[in-house]
Length: 231
Image (cartoon, rainbow, N blue to C red):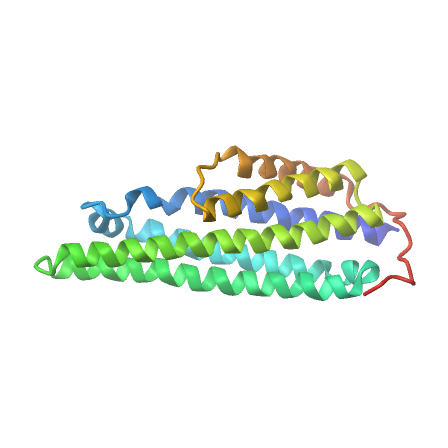
């Protein structure tokens, strides 16, 4: 059906917007756990105040577009797995909430930097300690948000697999790629060194999926939903 093609292309465009906003948001962040306890931490935050605010705004916007995509795809997923569709939407709502809270931690970092700039006589070690805790809190929240993202995307790829809305190879590749991301998050939580490649490989798949969806959309003749499914 022509509508299926249009729905798929719309999903591809939303994914493209997510990537187009997400990459600069990540690059503008300009902080990492390696900066923890650095004596120049507060100065760095103060000097990059506007850059960090833009990054925070874009990060929240990206999460909002993910939620919009989840709402958009909800009827499609519900056709094949009704119960899974509600879990899928619920996970994205929780993901959005975590992103809001974690980015609030980032904004409070800027407040600490401003306080240090206004009152240089304040105890620097205490402020740096508070800033470090907030940075660590943000990154731990980020890992849990990525884990939720992984679970939600795995559910989506599963529906794509059973429905054949996209080529099976893209669905299987997506399940493998997102599983690697999920495992990488757990490794990070258990303080294991992980390579960026564990996350980057998922980006390669996502870009391929976006290209396919924008060019082809969803399969106009997908598998008919099983009326005897278990919700």
